[in-house]
Image 1: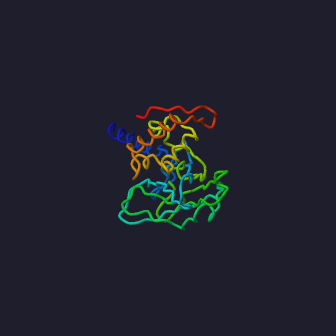
Image 2 (image 1 turned 180 degrees about the vertical axis):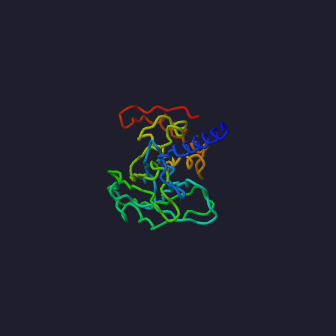
Image 3 (image 1 turned 90 degrees about the vertical axis):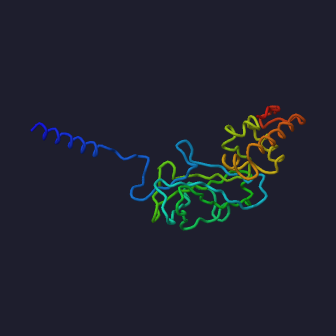
Length: 240
């Protein structure tokens, strides 16, 4: 009898534990795999893109997306839309119209969502334009983490501090200022890449290139007396 009572008690406790488990409130997918923007985190929901220093009037911004689930051996479709209520950019003026759906390639855990941007609007010289992107349900995917399915893309033709300046570029270019950034662009003939990975591993970039350009930039401020945007003199810095 004691053994029977003990077994009943164990079963009851296990059932109670199962029913008491609450779902992760950060996830909104169930049957389907989830999909989310890697650039969106709990701390930021936006990225910045600047045409400054770029010759072409059209460019493609590659935004990494990742599945919350398991890769499959067949292509699947996903959907990204523009949240018009939270956008100031105009379709056809600042960005190419999005497709009805996109292909997430077989056996991929991560890939890029390509957003085509346009430079020609003179307003980009004066203000940023916002494209609010949103992952929505498709036949194969649900939105993934609730705080990572929305991403605001700020498009401008002005200088924007790279998000990785304080972690990577600081080693070669010192403290950030817009004036220094502009000098670096003029010396290199191009602006810094959009992401850390591109600056670190992209073709035509890498640590050696950044060291060389950092030294060139530091030497410029040895030979030229220049103040930053706040009126403070920019002094040369050591390059590691």
